[in-house]
Image 1 (tube, rainbow, N blue to C red):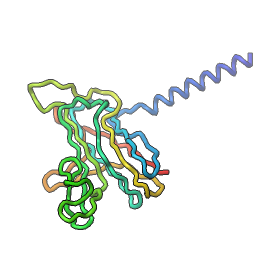
Image 2: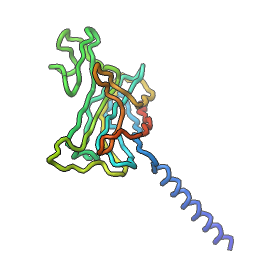
Image 3: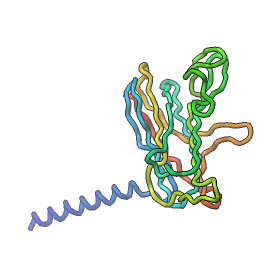
Length: 211
């Protein structure tokens, strides 16, 4: 009898554990979140950006700070391959760069220098301007075509590729909600539905650990 009771108790604990695990993965509001990453100096690695949306979404703007005074990560690129938004009609990526010497501004994707990492004007080294990366997605920009919006669900929306320099110190870089200032319209964090209405969307910070 004692064995039966013990087995029943263990079974209950297992069920409770599974239920708790499910609850941890359940979001009751639109939420952008990351899969945290651990890397070593000299390594290139990927950070997956996910969204759990309870509303149907037509687009999003997601600027992300990867700021650190000591750890100077290099943001290499952003990909939407294999994501829930892979077949969206429009996407934009911004990786702002600036020359350490003359302060000339570039963008690694939209306005790159002739030689990667080198300023066209003075030959100075380019560094990340604001340590920020930005991407935006819109389901449809042609009324003659039909593209599915992002229906409620949970999963990958973008993959960001970084490189940790060989001389990179150990530590943690937080991935936080960012913005890119602009004279006309700043690039801020937002999501919207097919009617163009901006919706609430939680931004859960992530982290990159360098060991």
